[in-house]
Amino acid sequence: MKGYATYRYTFYKRTYLPNGKKREKVYAENVSASKVLHKVASFLDYVNERSKASG
Image (cartoon, rainbow, N blue to C red; front, side):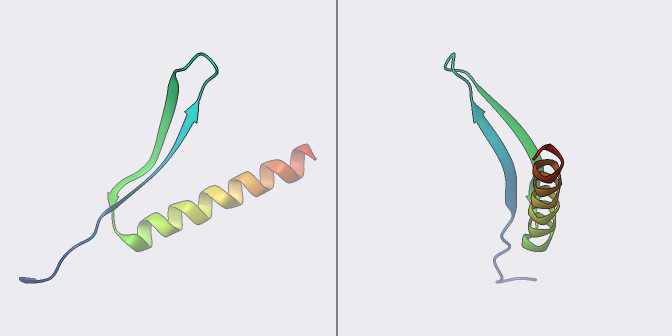
C-alpha cells in the first residue's frame, strides 16, 4: 500500500556476563507487531512455567 508506513519489530534477550561480554538470543526479527507480541507472550509463559517448576 503506497503511503502507509510499515513498522517491523525485533524481540531479543541480551545477557551481560560478569567478564564484560554479552550474549544475545533473538526470538523474532523484522516481524509484525502481532507476531512479536505472540512471541513475547509465549516467552513469558515459558518463564512462568519454569519458575513454578523450580519454586
